[in-house]
Image 1 (spheres, rainbow, N blue to C red):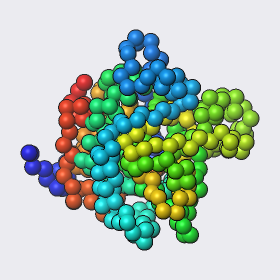
Image 2 (cartoon, rainbow, N blue to C red):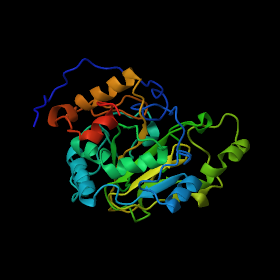
Image 3 (cartoon, rainbow, N blue to C red):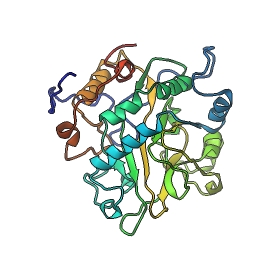
Image 4 (cartoon, helix red, strand yellow):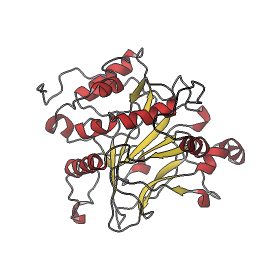
Length: 329
């Protein structure tokens, strides 16, 4: 096995996508794809989704892929996150500590974001064939890049560690972004009280008419959900399940009211590769090789720099190398 240095070896590479310095969204891929989402006109058979799944996706703007990652692999990723966060899953007294870095996007404070991006466990899940095939179905192309994103340990709220389950968009729906996002469950999330993903498919479907009822100066990233409360869907998932949602789907993390259960997840999405965008490709390769986190409104990073000092460069399989951009499709 090739030995990897534990310290960065390249000069810093600037973020190529600077669209997210003051607004949400992940800058590790393009903000919006030059390709449109799959409309099935390519005539290709679906790899993972059934026809029933496809109709659900089109109508609701989200879909859950069961067993996208083997359950044991998902649980091992969760074990790693506990280790990385210096918390004990059996001792709730270790769960609550002040954030290590200040979050520009204040709404995310206290939601349990884990500032790890390039660990082997995360890459193992990204380069799973079934995960990739699901995104091929959604996009209608095999040439994809995976987002370099983080994970989440969402603890039960308690005094001093509360947050509101706000509904938001990471991409302004007015711009009609061609983008999707994804969440991989690393623990069972079948209890509606334990936090996890929530969304409003009704607003996803009726956005163009809904916006006509809203003030001109409305928040483009956080809708006023008055009157939509009964339409909020709390999505249940089991460890290893992957949820993919359209970026025009209003969504959020719901408060964890369980008292003793922890919602654990990894954010994974894919976009059509932009192999001609050398600056973005260089940033992505540098991020993987030197364990560098994205910079942006929602990404404060880990001030301990543990990814660089404690962990090796993730080993990629043939699919992973293409999903990163290290090798061309």
